[in-house]
Length: 489
Image 1 (spheres, one colour):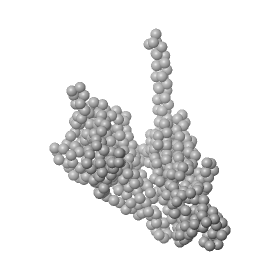
Image 2 (cartoon, one colour; image 1 turned 90 degrees about the vertical axis):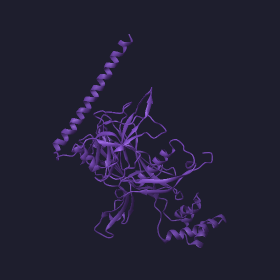
Image 3 (cartoon, rainbow, N blue to C red; image 1 turned 45 degrees about the vertical axis):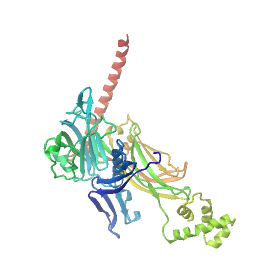
Image 4 (tube, rainbow, N blue to C red; image 1 turned 120 degrees about the vertical axis):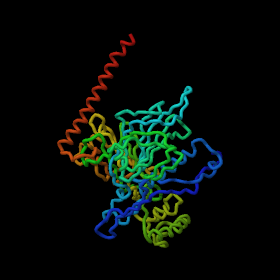
């Protein structure tokens, strides 16, 4: 702003970095690939430079800290990971799966009540707070509703949130915040870090509410007991780990999976060095639920690429002198079609020009290789809602697929609950994507294995509740219309 700069330096991460050998095969190289990730968000430390080092701007440090935290989580915190394929897809490696951790289960979070929370708001001479609960697991976060003007809040009995978890030793961070603040930190209290397993025992074995503490101390160890003087109050919250019932739509929450491999633009300008990514919108209001990383364009490999790149400047100079492609071909030993592609390239990027110099590179291949697991409520698969799943593939060069739209009801009625790829288009550009959409099944509370009849009965009961709810809403609307004119008269 006004020539002033803001930045960070000396960034360091402290946490448990995991290196996983994945997808073992029965042929060389035996290992399909490696995955590197943090099981839990690492502790960040850095120093600010520029204007941030000399001026304390309200909310700036919080904003910067949250931005850096999100960038790290999006790249390296489970389920996000850096994957290094060792074998090839032809040898059986599933690169999208290599880049994503398998889901352990769905953690249901039900905030109940809290006591003795700090009062942060001053209103008409009295102090209170507007508390809400946040639960973070990996790169996901659940945020509860706000209970206004209450330091001993109670949340609605039917309130619940959900986060996907990937290991029983994955950390859960539980904090309570004050909704009423804008620029200052709305923090009220925090619990000790919990493992998923600890959270389940907390509920299953009636260990009572979680103790809450100030943020004057950094709680980093699960076994560490914070000083009593830092204790603030208590929070009652129930945790339930729900398991996946594959290929059955019988419970209150389903899992939608979108898998994308490569994207190929067959009439793509070979001189445009760009990237491609995929976004998924799902819900009655079309909320964006997931966006993949940017997929890089697959580059030609080997000596041929290096040789072509060295020859490109010669081709360009001879073309400027007015030489015909056929004459340039005799001097450079490059085929005429490749020479024509080189001289048509508009970019100055030498790598992009060299890629254009390879015959048959008009088909640009982008390796997105990503997988998304999205939790959806069962109501979205019912016939009366027609909830769409909209998948958009875009590139930094402006190319895009026409949006792919699938109706969850139609997906749920398919025998295998999936729409396999690839997807092909000829307008506005010829393109193909290795893309599949499927409903993996239902999240249900742990318990004895159920028969097919029990599964069907449970879904029918859920649908009956849905119908009853719709009828009650219609009755209320009808009563309000009848009562409206009478009040006016």
